[in-house]
Length: 602
Ligand code: NAP
Image (tube, rainbow, N blue to C red; front, side, top):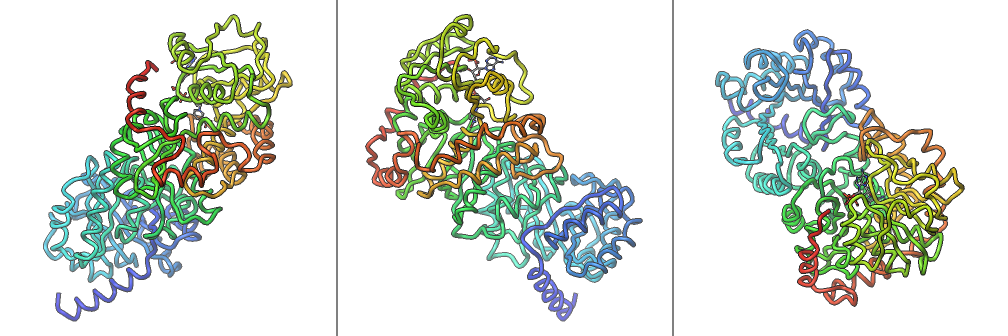
């Protein structure tokens, strides 16, 4: 290529880069009509698209219609991709046949074409120049479907071709793989003449889809809607825009997240990002899928992450890695909230307790109340210790009696047999087992004759109206949905992290909406799997149930009933933590010891 062509190519490439947005939406379809229909819908939200021509039954035959579409939609910038099967795509033909389609795409008006490194390496030397001469900017991409490794070596293979964009897409097997990718992006940003696009595929790679931009990725990819993902871990465009507010993520954006496994179905990103947006906090909250506490910790230190929600299976494992934790969390042996304080150290709290005790205390005084807890797992421990802490008398009924006995001993509670329940009068019955959860098999733990309490609190929140709550309501008892716990524990986390009152009503609204829609974590409403289980919450039941969660949340001011442990006014906690000497924070070693001692047989 001569110098003047080179210069004009560079100018064209520069103009193109200034025209594209941060999100490129991948569009798939079996034929041109479908592709165009989907693209037309997406164009209302974003003008940067990728047409996956390899998904078409006959890509070449579709080009005349796609040419028309491009001519009619001058604002759109569209990438043509025709990935061969060997490289993880769906195109059956040879590299030369795929190139032919890309050449014709460029001539048809596609502004960018994406060719795989493995293809261009096998094609004739002039391929790059030919694509440019056909009128398109070029992405050379590399996908690793197994690991995140050798990124620099891949870059070195691509760079000599001098493409406009170098796209490197490994697979995250751990959260720390995202760090590898983001460090790579940071290194390359100043070094490379090409724009770099970097994303980690896989559920553990979700963080890279949001924070990769900040590390230097020219753009990121999104699915058109839930269910139309073209890569594992891909997020729908609306989720990236509305939930993660990707356009506003900048160097000052504080990062939070929920760590555990599985996490894709968690409603926490939807609820917490909604809260941050509502309170105009420059923060983003991400799903961090991992089984390993040290994996999330390494990520948290380096990103840095300001706060974590911790869920199964990490609630216990995380404790030894924390600087300190509050006394009730230590007793329970579980932390669901981590705060990175101003000293850069991590402190643990348990807001599950507040999520259970708060809703109850709005309805009765727990002092001397008789409480039956079903289950002896993590949620049950929060319920038992929380109620005991408030002066309640607690009985535990569990499938495995030994676990119940152990918990009873630890918490100063009693165990009870199934046959004895109906004869005992309780003020409160709390279900802390998964029985009643959508998709969960297992016989009801109690029958109507056993519901001798005034209040029945089912910690299960999908469906919103569980069979247990339905039974309680039929008996005229007060029924509390697990949604209330979910929102309350999240609200307390928000307060610990930000020092601001949580927008509880808004958090409740989006969670209820998502559960009703059987939506993705983002709250999207496509035919997605239900958030916490296999099928959507029955709309009919939901329609009957709103009082389960609403009145209490509405009637209680945010600061009215936080549990003693987590939210003596949050600012006080945060301040104390910052000084490393909170009145009720116990030493790390002591907690770790307890955790080891407590390795219980759950
Ligand atoms: P976990 O630690 O696994 O404990 C589960 C408990 O349920 C154990 O005591 C277990 O008994 C018992 N159990 C499990 N399957 C059973 C069955 N088929 N029949 C009788 N008992 C059974 O789980 P977790 O973290 O405590 O969570 C329990 C439930 O609480 C979850 O399913 C979730 O729906 C709910 N939850 C809600 C929130 C919220 O924010 N609303 C938060 C956390 C949890 P064994 O000891 O015999 O195994």
